[in-house]
Image 1 (cartoon, one colour):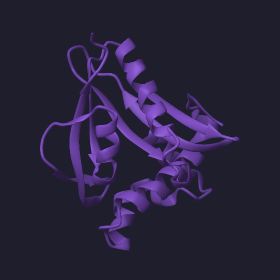
Image 2 (spheres, rainbow, N blue to C red):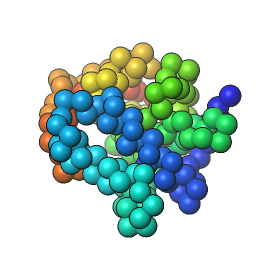
Image 3 (cartoon, rainbow, N blue to C red):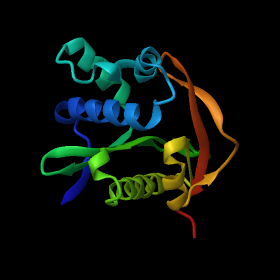
Image 4 (tube, rainbow, N blue to C red):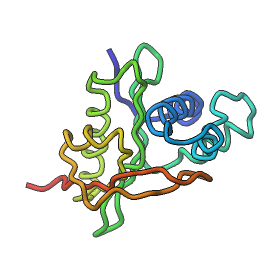
Length: 173
């Protein structure tokens, strides 16, 4: 059975980095050549490295106001990063990753619900996100709506990442 808990940088950063690198590559970067995938992964391309410089770069990229992890038998199997909006501005779900062997077990939904509760408590009334094409059906099932058409974006030093802007009203009524 898994638990959802707050991220603890000192003990979770390396495992979260590996999780992001593996799932990002597998589910979102298949359109890109191996060289372009390395650019799109940015510091996460070094997630398995023990080099302190690589680990520090990953830790810095991960930092945001709220990070939650899903843990199953001592292993991190999911992570969600989000931040509340400034007064009158929407909150932001920055990234969500769940290990492939833990898909369709409710982990992503529980992570998103935790984020939504936290952001609503901090005054956010809308959450925006940029869904990768793979993730659009999940976010729609969680109540998010497409806010514009599909866009082409970047990730770190890479180009061509297609995403769908989405949003959801929270904490009202």
